[in-house]
Image (cartoon, rainbow, N blue to C red; front, side):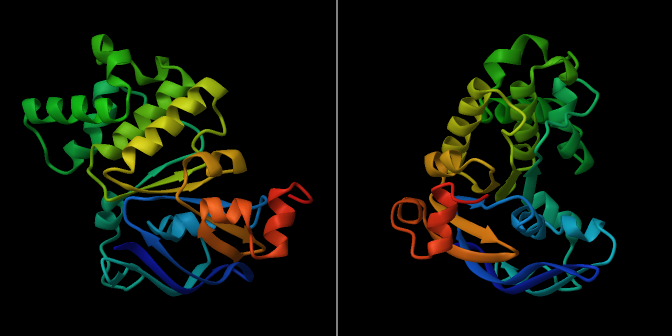
Length: 250
């Protein structure tokens, strides 16, 4: 089953075309990685899936992104509901300036959950799924800002999980982290794909090779190649893909 079906997607920021005729399918419960040099369109594409590009002035999207067989760019789409179903984790950890508990409970509270027992269960479950609970169980009332960078990023993943999304978008989620914290996030991503579809933009080809099922290589706003990760890295079909993954440019 597809989580998303993308058909002839073009994205413009004013007169600048950021994406050109992108068409691909994203399968449910897989990790999909987007790689490519800076400015190639991979983060712009990621933001299309929950319409975060709507927040950028003079943005125009043409083409289709189907989610549950419905075009998310249809004028009838409930964007708030879409962003609940398609969560996002950003490049730099961005915990709210409140307690660890309240960071996780924030989304459910906004959706009307008021029962303290229910909220507590959601917080504990989300922290456990984000492999963070054991480290913070005795300080849930402490500020989230006191956590390490890697812990903050896992907290942000837990915050996304608390809303029970179907898809989690990750925009270079480990680029600000040290190798040990990065390894923990990677282990977590592989575990989470049992329950979620994960789409990740990464600057690290090694990371894409380690954790993703399929990889798309972007160049100048186009998808040059989209293939099973092992195939793309070992037997790329396009010379530009081979040049990039062997370090000839980028």
